[in-house]
Image (tube, rainbow, N blue to C red; front, side, top):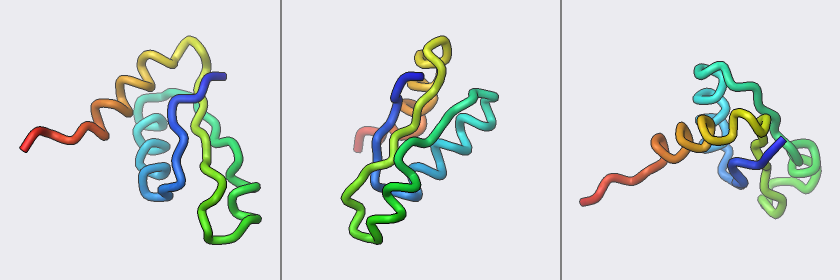
Length: 71
């Protein structure tokens, strides 16, 4: 498993989970329980991981979906 995203943003995390699920890419979210135990201070980021074989495709999906277009 390889990390493709580390974030404290619950909206971004949910969005990335939906992208990966729609693409049929198996993923895991690490530190979700630890982060929820610490409360709402967002000190511990959650990490999204995918299988090593899916890293390129998953990273491309995340990069394309989160890229900010030039003004």
